[in-house]
Length: 388
Image (cartoon, rainbow, N blue to C red):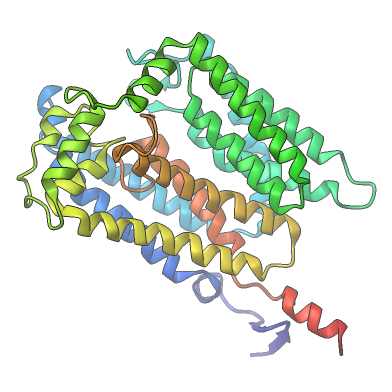
């Protein structure tokens, strides 16, 4: 078999797809994702039976569904990670336009499931939340636009990406879904910053976000109630934050023990938005620290790999996706310990939720694709060659 030395790695011609994928993909990140999913299943066995009992279902109905959705998410993750960056970009752009159309049609065909925000399409046997699928494809589209704008005779990608971002944020705010809107603005800011944006523009974006938050506080009772609850000196023990705070306090360092927690019986979103409260109460801060370490490992390894990447699009897209995943995890954890206002956002690969799990599978698959070792000269090699 012929071996071709190119850059800093060796490419074996004629190598099968699966061995080549396994040799070039970040296996540590895959292990972290599998660990998070396993923890999510473990916590699901504790958190979902109370909800199933309230809804008149089998005790482990939601655990079985999480197994099914998680299996699909992991399969999609592996499939996407095997693709080339060009294929991922093309499919993501097509998916972006489809997700935007679905988002715009929510006021007409969507439903709120009694939660006051029209964010889902009901399919009868399941529901779909377009904003979850929009996030990863939005990042790739934005990275493509901004990277293309730096090319000679390239499109005005920065202006297009800003206009698209403002439009998406407006539709998300109409639902209302200020949390997802904040994630979109954050992703755009990170990509633009990595691409070399002037600080004046980023400061302007920060001021605009602050002004938008003030307007939302004055015009949205739902938004104002959550902000007031967050700023209040006392936590209402009958609210979700109150239940979560008590659970974390009761768990201590090592937890109350498997099945001994009580928050799952009183907290409506114990299996989704506040799954970390169940982890803290039953398994203690030890498990919480393990979960945080897993997310930190994923983010750190991705950033180090992307620092060596010479393709501007891959650097921007990969940085945007890993920042999106890390921020979503941070928001979920921050809400539970009252560092942030209450916001319905799942913990990636741990919380229950079909749309969230599968969309995260797509996102991590893209990240694994962008961080795979490829036959190219890395930035360090190029800089060294210029001085020889």
